Length: 271
Ligand code: PXL
Image (cartoon, rainbow, N blue to C red; front, side, top):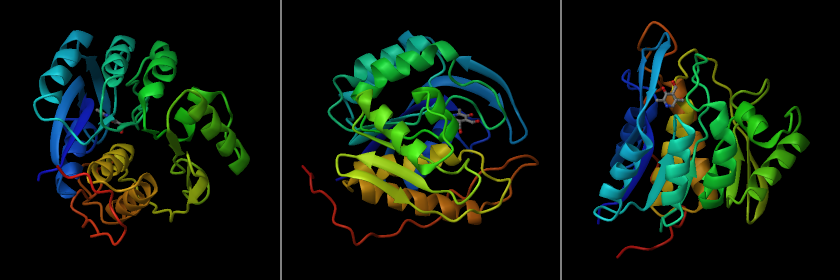
């Protein structure tokens, strides 16, 4: 039976981030991808020149149209674009029967806002209670929790505060730290570090999207949360290492890296 995953995110016409990246990563994991658009961007690898959110009503209709007809096994959100869209997604997420991964995308690599300030509170209070896993980078975690992150203890405190908003689990990504890119996860089983290897490259456009899409694909396939995070982290490292060097700015990762056929046991929930 075909596994299905859904992304609710923005368009990056250059194909490195957003819905375009999510669909390619789902496909690479052997998962059929559905995509609901929240906003359009005008961008290339050099800059994001325009961000145009869609109406919340249009986002609601898209989600409602696909969700009963081709129900996904897991979903993710990326750039949401407006407070109204966050509210709408949160309201619908209340009745999702599958895990939701929230990548709280706030600002593009080039510094353009993909979520207005006034939507951050709504994301915390309305969307996180319906979230299985939230995947902020360090800056996003600071803005969501008010904790300034400079040490492992700060990260631990920030993950605790994220869970206090009602999500099941939180992973704070170390990609923007100064040292090794360690990701820290807090879930029902406690706090765990996922050590990483820093790959120095300017081609990191869409890294967060690829990571959360890979996690979502794994969850859809029935992998446990910690296995999903581990697989996704390894996938992202190899995708940065072998980035195709496209574009004259910060280019995309290699969306074609091979997905390991895992020995880890999957949860069986085939119909
Ligand atoms: O990687 C963050 C991101 C998410 N979604 C869209 C984007 C970007 C970064 O540019 O354009 C649509």
